[in-house]
Length: 162
Image 1 (cartoon, rainbow, N blue to C red):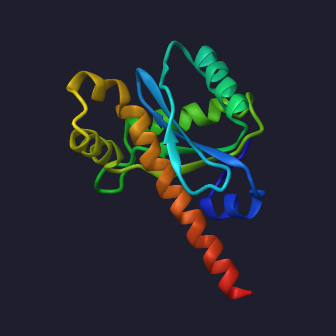
Image 2 (tube, one colour):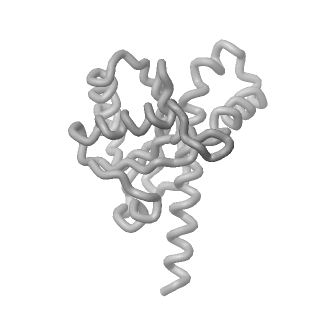
């Protein structure tokens, strides 16, 4: 397993490979998966966290089922750009995944992704109870969509440089 920048991932991805977005919480892991063209992020069921070993097996089973080629994981940076305990926990989770999978991880600044996801769910008139169930996967979709948009921009820039 490797930790890559989004630019490094762009240079390594092959056509028709899906990637997953992750929103790592203390109780759940929100998951979103791209289409094979890597244009649209679609939320999936959340993983209820138990302990790392079980969480890793569950996450990798989803990755295998969805034929994932890389993970984009939200890095919960503070609004001032500093990294607090939640960033440390996310980095520790990724470090622990090193021995579990060859799939690369990309950190993605997730500031305000949960806020944006909640706004969309409210606009969709989703009840408070259902919002609580869906918020982590919706946040994972915001994280992944940001990365997909960046990958598309890098592809356009690369094509125009040729």
